[in-house]
Image 1 (tube, one colour):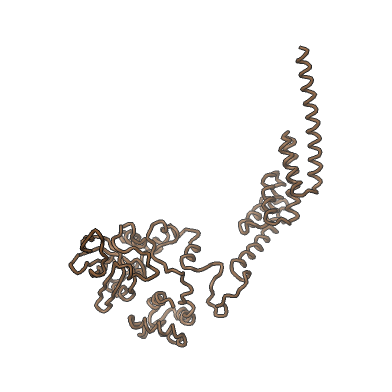
Image 2: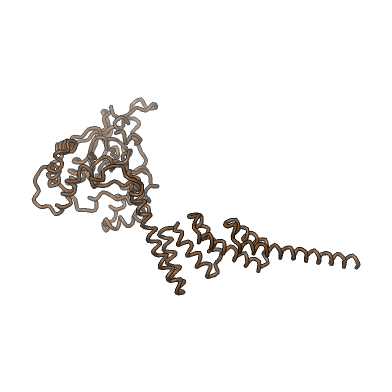
Amino acid sequence: MDKDLLKQALSFHGPTLYSMLKCEQYEHLDFRNLLGEISKCHAYSKKERKVDNIDVQQFIARKADLLFSLKWKPNTASVTEKNDESEGYYAVMPPLEQFMDVPNRKKREMFFRDVERGDVVIGRISSIREFGFFIVLSCLGSGILRDVLPLEINALCPLRDVPSHSSHGDPLSYYQTGDLIQAVIKDIDRYHEKLSVSLQSAALPSHLSSVKLGVIPTEDLPIYYKQSIVMSSSASQTYEKVLHQSPGFVNPSTVEVLLDKLGINESNPPSLMRCLQRHHFSEEDYATTIRKKQSALWALKCVKIGVDYFKVGRHVDAMNEYNKALEIDAKNVEALVARGALYATKGSLNKAIDDFEIALENCPTHRNARKYLCQTLVERGGQLEEEDKLLNAESYYKKALTIDENFHEAEDALLKLRQNMQVEEKTEKVHLLIFYIKWYFI
């Protein structure tokens, strides 16, 4: 079970959800043990009088063993991004309480309620003693992200948790007051609100083993913290304004990025229906395949409307329908053939040839695509003949015969072209001979 996610749900919904979970999940041993472990640190068992979202809480309680299952999580837990290159992929927001009128006392209470051993914290050294140094927390680098800067929460890093550096005999001599430190929570005294942190990599949980501990530059501060600083300088900023100003909010690939970050495979989507909690489905049953079929049918409907427009001479409307069909399904052969035929009718033979070729690539057995392509190639070859570009015209006729070796129109056109070329060649030779005779006698 995902302990962090369950704690967030209980923090939001309160004691009523806790009571419902105990009732609905009493047969689920792992879930009961997890609830018992959480209740030791947090007071979720008190009664609550008024509940506005009872239907939502009932749904969560009934589906809790599925909703909080670890199978939804990626193989490696997500760590707050440490470089600005990731900022544009999805919206990164400051902590929610920063947009609300929450007293610092309540913020402090929430922090010590939710912080866990193994969470990464970032702060500045406030004082250095012979037994270690103290840091004042600026922000968190993992876990439930809170607005901790105004709370002035101190944490002790004991001397035994400061790694030694070869160039310094005393480990503490490497550090100075004001240094920005990234550390990991080692011990928590929730009652007295005291923390101790460590700079030893061994104290990190396995999924955060790559996190750098010790002195860090300001560039490595989390994105959400940088946004918090900017937001705090303007009292008029609302959640909606900050969200819409975030470059990642308008990223068209946000859903794909977040699915990848959460470890959810879109082509094999999970389900909250218990009867579907198995893995033996054929490829045709998945959303991606069904969506392709739906798109193909929708595109064909647009093609049919376009053909009806074409028959009554409404060529602009027909073209709009064909383009719409290809926006829905870019490989729709019928739309490509229909649009190619319209291009050919309007005299845009090169565009028509392009559409017919793509259609034939997507469906090599499509008879109309093959037929219309050969006809258009021959027609284009005829245009080139009229422009006296005989070699180019010959290549178009040959291409048509390559596609369909029994296409008589191309055979006849090629034969006629070659006869004309032979006549022209003989005529050129006669003219050249006459020229040489005249030149000789002069």
